[in-house]
Image 1 (cartoon, rainbow, N blue to C red):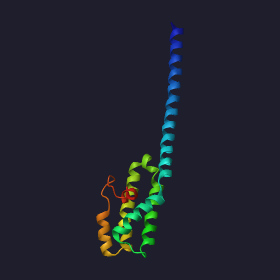
Image 2 (image 1 turned 180 degrees about the vertical axis):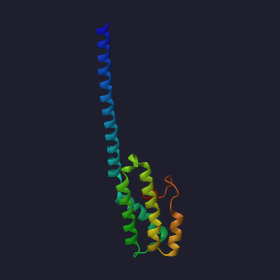
Image 3 (image 1 turned 45 degrees about the vertical axis):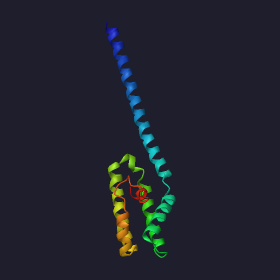
Image 4 (image 1 turned 30 degrees about the vertical axis):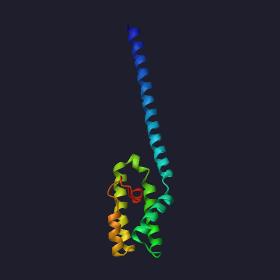
Amino acid sequence: MKKKLLILSMLLGVFTFSNAQSMGDLTKAASSATSQAATAATKSFDVAGISNQVMGYLSPTLKISDAQKPAVNSLVNELLNKKKNILPTALTDKAGYASKMTGIRNLFPTKMKGILNAGQYTQLLGLLPKSATSKSPLTQMLF
């Protein structure tokens, strides 16, 4: 009877140890998958393509002059690069990502105010997307 109890205890101990090892492997695999997804999202974020879409939308809509285009293009690229840099945190730190994106969303009209004239700026404020579901090209940059 004591032998059976001892063998059963050892078997239970081995089983428990084996499961603990498997849980560690699962945790590592999940962490690895998350980091791979974040890396893939960053690589697929096409700054130049989105910048061209945004400029193609803003230029005719706001009637941006040739003198204003380099400054607007530079700002758009700057904000898109900032977004690309924080994109990996979208999966791991949602609150931090949301906070940083809010900063970028607020920075865009602030900096544009110094580039555009009053009429263009007023028109820009009406173009800004209110949510991530908006169909505007600005949504890709600001959300």
